[in-house]
Picture 1 (cartoon, rainbow, N blue to C red):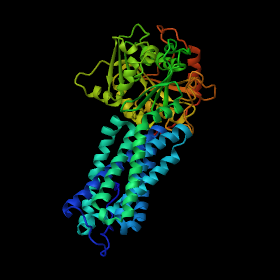
Picture 2: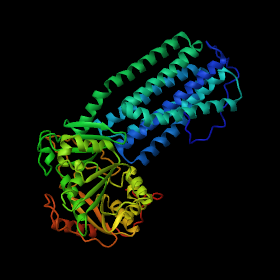
Picture 3: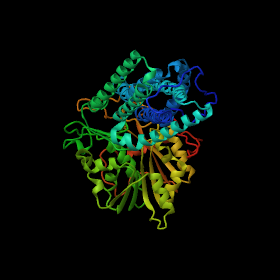
Length: 572
């Protein structure tokens, strides 16, 4: 596959004049069409391998911008190396292309499984990511000069015309592969099986071209060698597809522990849930039921632990409910229903609107026995309306709607940490400007703003961004963030700790700096505390909240610029 970001090479020429025309079993016109068809298929497969590496690295390592940059830059460099190395094979282009395609099918098809294995059992994927990007790039780059030689041997034509035909087939194939990955392969087959299936298609296309169309160019020994190699590659890929499900199950247990009971690829993210099936597991407040404490992971990051979530959600919701009315509440994110549970404890609440992007999380929050027990079936309350949409787009629509809704007394932003590239726009100046438009004059906005000590600059950038849209802020923090709670773009250098009944990895860490960070904002400095009608809190008291406010204020980093869509500032 030729990378579309590169200009067409001007030095590509036809094969040496002493190469004889290929002896094909079909007419030259049909043979040329078949070669271009294989170019199309190989380009589609090559782009699928590339996207597969980016997607899996983003999920396993985090920070999609960095991972995409590493994969693309290494692959483009390697393609140049591969093109240079393939020059030595042009005199035996058919044999060389057959070997290259067999190798590419095996390496590319098995790459996803190998990366997942490195993450699950060795806790390291970066070196493997670079290695696979380099190997796949070299093999893709080697295709171009070999295919150029083969297409010129089918029928002589000027170099410019041959390059144009080759590039046209390549780019159209890349388009099909790029669309097939997110809309067909990923939702229908998943990451592992999708990559293996792509390898099968790649191997078959290369074998058909060489072993049938160009079979007269091969010696009997070369023909049998290529046939054996392709049979072995197809057998290995088929075995991988058969073993993909038990392999994924074993790898998941290596990462999450034996209590992992739910694993769903929603099309937006991977959702894994461990423990939390017993009567006590859904009660939260530190009690363990059968199967251990409930833990919810989104794309490998711990988002909810039944042992600590009550501290997080009480600190997120209850200070925002103080200082004014709270009849109409908007929750941005919060598809697990746990923030809604705390909001509905106030009798004055008349309506709650939840805007959640992932319908899979909402489905689990409603139907999973452990999670629905933990959220007290809050999403089924008649006062709750759920909208499945991107929070940024939904807020923008509210501002342009002909029937503008009544403003909200409280807005709760229960979103992933701003350090994750996918959520950066949800912590931007533009996003908070849209939120301020639907906030009542005396309303309050509360934001989960990431760890205030471990990633202090990130936390105070959120504060600066809120202030840039005319909101006054009160920063505060609450201890108890689990050591395994990965919210930022960088994962640990080891696999996630086990989450078992015997090994409660989601327990709070006693180490210094394990805080959840929040920002309470309003048009005028909001009153910080608890509302007169606040229910009894299990994990927090007013004194601890005040201590968290004072502690956060002492560590302020002044003078930081606001984050915008054009200039995102959340890079660490």
